[in-house]
Length: 127
Image (tube, rainbow, N blue to C red; front, top):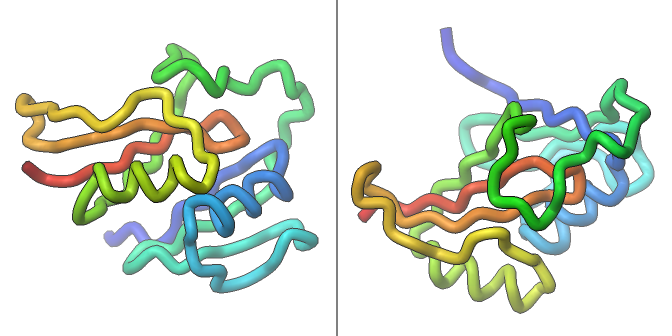
C-alpha cells in the first residue's frame, strides 16, 4: 500500500487555492481559483483542495494558535532550509504561528503556520 494523494477539505477553497499558489508557491497541476477542485504538484504525493461539507465557519481553528485540540491534520513540507523558506514566505505576507526552531528530540528544524482554512502546516528540515 502506498499513499498517493492528500485531499484537504476546506471551507474556503478560493482563499486556500490563492494561498497555496501565490503565497506558498506551489505549482498548479489542475484547476484555478474558480474551480471547485484544485491539485498541486508536490512530488510523489498529490496534494489537492476540495470544498468541505461543513458549513459552520465558526469551527475554523484560530490562525494565531500554534496547535489546538481540534486539529485533525498537519501538512508537513520537507524543505532544504527552513530559515530561507520562512523568510521568503514572510516576505509574501504569510504569518507564522511559530518561527523556526530546532527540535533536537525529533532531529528537525521546524516552523509552523496555518492556511486560510485553519490547517496546521509544518516546514521541516533535518538537522
